[in-house]
Image (tube, protein in one colour):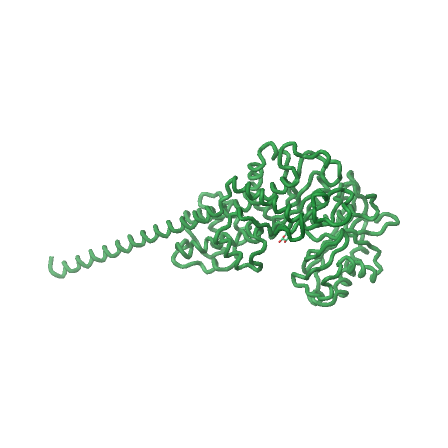
Length: 506
Ligand code: BGC
């Protein structure tokens, strides 16, 4: 070999060595990244852990906070608000009832014709009306006049099959989803407007009086018999109408909350005459529940700090549909930044808050295809990225961790409520209570659930139900049923207008 040949051979060997060294270094880097990604995930998973003993502490903390919130106003982060609903529908209601649902830029008017236990809901109709922007920031009278004018026009279109009973006023349940200090079943003062409404004069006023006054101005002969300020209360009424064993209602949607039937004599902060039924519905506002036993990770801390309401709604931020997707996004972002989960550059969409929605999490979590096709699709569509199969698997694990923690905590919350009302153990149902109309009649206790998280997330639902059985034990769990109650809250206000009718005997 000439000198030239030797030089070339040396250069060739050096290049091969360099490439090999580069490949080895890359492999070493990849391995280090993968170990780092696993370590981040394992840390997160450990922080989210909900072993049974911990859930039992959450159950007990829920019970303690419920007592504290019932003892006095501000006694707990759990507000335990009185709803003044002390009659729930029984199914025996008869006649035509209306509901008006105001809680955003659209309002809904609805009518139902009820025909007792045999006929039940003969007919129902509703209409949705959007509120002109100007009226949301205009005058009090203009807003209520507009609403009542639409309601009056809806009434004129009462078709075949809708009949007010002779000589009776039409009655209406008013759902008003804004912060209100309720003072009775048919009165409550607006504390502040939210959701884009800003009409100074209404603040501090009784919204039922305002609505009733507008009805007067329109010569509309109608009476507001129930003010419903929370969707859980409507859900409870809707569930109870069909099933007398419904004692608890839970909403698991964008937000989360629960209400339940409580004995009036177990509410020390109650002022005034106790209701005839002996019980009343408590709106827990459980989204703001907090306990040091709740498993919270640094990811949850930053989610809270970056939120519109830091320090508030701590339980809701662990369990509700609004947040689950963003918790998953945040942990994936951490793994992308610190362990190159999606390669050397972090996909820019991973930085966008709330870009990953809970339905996407549900879809990835449910993916049982060998190559995780759905995960590939969501990563492509939402984050504009792709990933190897082992990365896609870890994405599913993250979804499982986040949804599993949420579902198990919801189960603990529900069992807390059951424990508070003595429905968590076999044969624990106090027979004396069964005599009053609000306490349910059967030996079962039914929890009415509404909201997309329960309805459209099968793995979440399974975790929730299984955990409830784990906590209650098989035998006691047989006395409890969780039932989907779809849009109970819509019709719930009309049913509450019926159960609080001025014509009913109690
Ligand atoms: C609100 C509750 C409401 C729940 C379900 C929560 O964010 O605080 O008042 O019942 O969402 O819609």
